[in-house]
Image (cartoon, rainbow over all chains, first blue to last red):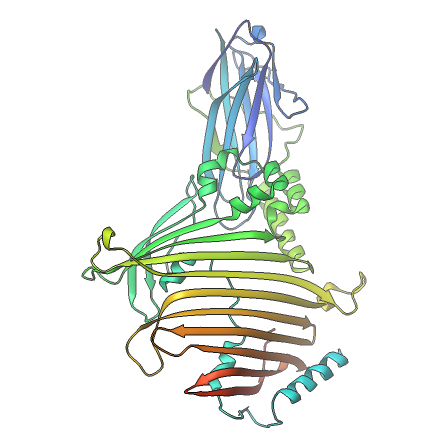
Length: 117
Length: 376
């Protein structure tokens, strides 16, 4: 789990999952309580960004992501990458990235704990 | 079918005088002529190795996280001499921009497709530890057009995406409380099996695609240093290859006809140019440099009981200190199922305009045989 800081007085928080290397994928996100209970699926906006919620309500909340990726050819190992971006008040920053190779497909799981600053 | 066979037979009879037997030639015979059937219309996937004249036995493809494959090259050259060296095989665009390249962007952008299919190969070779001359080559492979690109197939994309989809009943993976970033875990065996089924279906559909097209371009430059020092590096020739192919169906084609019964065709247009290629003239032990070019086209047709190939090519060779040779080559091949799995195969070749001393000669070759498997 990675730690991310969010401005307490800032606007709503959005998260974007970018799967690179031209790979076919599907993904989902959840928001958890600070004690890692009560997972709630996060909705997406028209652009496919996940709506995490208003900043003031997110202290010590945990967000998690699950990404499934399929290789475009079945035989050779293919590179893949998953990058997680967090956006608040129009400012976007990368909070996590995983790059690797797969044969046929792979699932990438990750999470982040939010701290208000 | 009958009209095709008759037309083919007329061409055959007009092409060479009627002869009987296993092998017969007229004028100045050239038994090796038919060995050129079909001419090599492929663009090398690693042009750097091709221009060095080596046949790699052990080169890994890009398989690490950054899409960079570096390996020791273990290869033999055109004379069968073992060459060792280092080979790098990569796609610089994926290395530099990979994490930013999404599948949606790939589908929409022909520029992203072009750059993502590019391949760069770099190789250096040396004959032995004691040898001082070192060869190096840089090659690029471009694929501007490929209708068989799996990423552009909407059915494959939908199939893979459906198999990857999260079911509403699937419980979320609990977050790891340990510090650290994302982690990769293997997909379940059932999902992998279904993904593989999607790919198998794609391959099957590709075989039935009558309009598949592809266009490839390969270019490579070689250099050599005779003392192993970079400041003594000299050019050792350039090569460029290009090939376009298109499949099509002909004759009666309807949806009721089994796909295995469809008459198919493929047209390939190919060109290549090579400078300073090291060749051994016939009957000589010394190697000379030669520039050469080839432009050709091949038409292949195939039906359940008949197949054929017609090739025409323009060949120009310019050996250093020797006479240039320009000639046209036409090669014709056909096969017909006789009974069971026995096929009659006929091949005819003719070189026109070939230089032999000061004379221009025509060389022809004709061969027929029975085979147990089809060729075209």
